[in-house]
Amino acid sequence: MKVFKLSSSIQKIIIALSDTLITQPQELTITDRDAQLIKRCETLLREFPKLMRFGFLFALHAFNQLPFLFGFGTKGFCGLSLPKKRLYAKKWLNNRFNLLREAYKGFRGIVMYCYFSHHDVWDYIGYHPKQHIEGKIKLREEILKRQGHDS
Image (tube, rainbow, N blue to C red):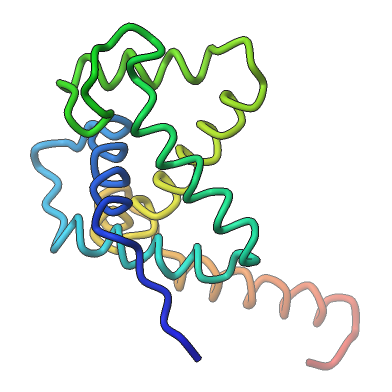
């Protein structure tokens, strides 16, 4: 089976998009943030059907190349300053063309999902899924016992 890897240009776009979307608290230290973000995106996108993955990556390239349509000059998204990146992203989000709005929501969703699935972020926000799952299993077993079911 062929291993799926994102090209360096797509990696730069994803990292620039994450910097645009997420204002990371100073006290939050994420181990190998960019590499982990890319790894999680690769893992997620690997599961996409090939045509959907191609469309997503094509749209991401278009997102990077089209700032000139919105009056941001000839630089790509990655070359813009942070305030201009945020304004450009807002223009996609509030665009009257549904295709652009929905594409941006997809980019945003994937980047945010991959960022917030990092264990350092989980620790910072107090999310402990293993404890949560174990608690739900115990609760279920207690309910089943009360109902007279054997587990």
